[in-house]
Image (cartoon, rainbow, N blue to C red; front, side, top):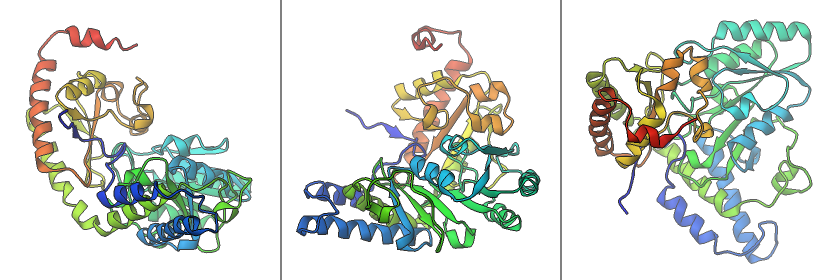
Length: 384
């Protein structure tokens, strides 16, 4: 079977060879990492090494790392586990695991470029302060759909002015841009292994010194009683290896910006009506999120899939559905723009020839879909 050209790294990126090899090795070690016999100690040692690797990758402290089943669990834990918090303010472009984490969510609007509106954030902070009770602000570092880098440091500074706690979802940031939770002034930072070349089903919360959150899962002493349940030893070890490698190669990853810019220049040359979301804002180097009014997302994705190229319309959390992107709604995109969105996201394994293959396919697909009536392909989709 011919390998598909994979341009959906924001959804999940391939495992890095070192991480995969380590995980494969440890899956053959039978033990509970809490056991005191030799096999148990082997797995425990790998978990603790991974804790150090993950902490170092984001400028944190190893003992403040809590391993979870992924960024979704990590986000929900933080937003529900901060003591004495009455108000939770999140940006309108957050991942659903943040926007729907709890019942006391207040939404801060974003600009057309997908950046949180800091003036509106201050208004919300001021209102919450007047009402009384603790405040938590959550702003992601890099958006999963647009690749836009949020002004997290500035948002955190505003939060501090009003005595608020601050959390950032850095799942899409690690390995793509420098991440230092101390410089960002975050109380809590959350991560996902499979976004950096580790396995799916593993994530982490990194807390600042002296900060604690109540556990979401109770009933066990694992993770110092901060997250009950037997640790995914092999997955955690692979996460550590991937996080270390990703953080060490941020400069190399930045070179993807040249490929992204080339892709966008060529798309605009072939199809001038294309709208590129977040183009005027700071962006992670690997992501291009755009719309071609008149061409619907689902037929586009299927056409690329038939060409052997994997792309998507936006977040993987709504793949397989025809729901509109909440990120594009937050970015004030028109209904037509929302219905024709396409995201191309590269990763550590992407090559220049992947982009050239995409552009060749785009030229063919665009010409065909722009100049024909609906055909059997459209009928076969049967999207309702």
